[in-house]
Length: 114
Image (cartoon, rainbow, N blue to C red; front, side, top):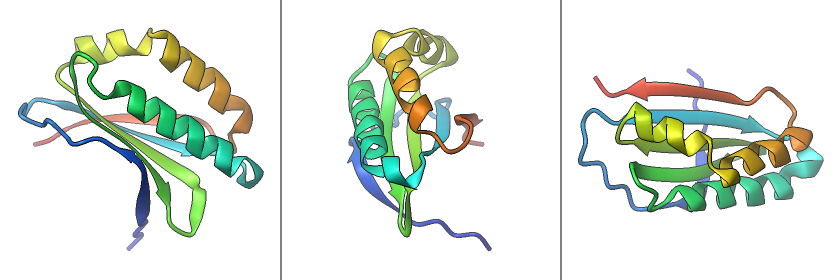
């Protein structure tokens, strides 16, 4: 069993009243010397999603023991709102800023609760 425990860099109170929500889990891995900058970027990105139209929940987490490995969790009301979010300036800026710090490909996966 592979258990990866995390601590919150940023976590908003979820408003999950939509059982059809789209959940996005993104793994962000930065080179260890870039850990602090990575934490700041993930925290800032997650906090800017909070309260956006269609965003039901958002959080940024770092793995205990390997805190240069981070996870971003998002829950969106629908695909249309999630797709619109991807074109916002702060999202484009986050991806441009995190790329030079990265130690692996940016990996975002979409899920629905069944």
